[in-house]
Image (cartoon, rainbow, N blue to C red; front, side):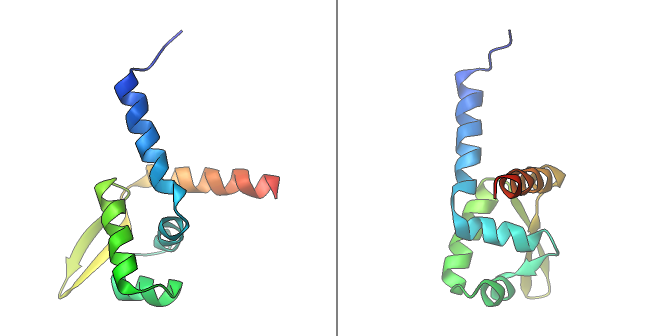
Length: 98
């Protein structure tokens, strides 16, 4: 039987906590479609730019989103395929229950 280290499981716990906020999930959901800048995300979700910026900071710190600067704008996108898979399977699981 394999038992993971306490540190590794703590990291996993912290990783899953980031998914515990509806605004962060809404941001991730729209970023699945294409990279967007803060004002575009704010407009789509009808949430203030400062609130979006705050949540994007959390998502970046957790390595769920990455940035690319194009001209004066910073575009945010999902950091890698793993995040897309986690969201996809989570949504599929919830859809089965509903």
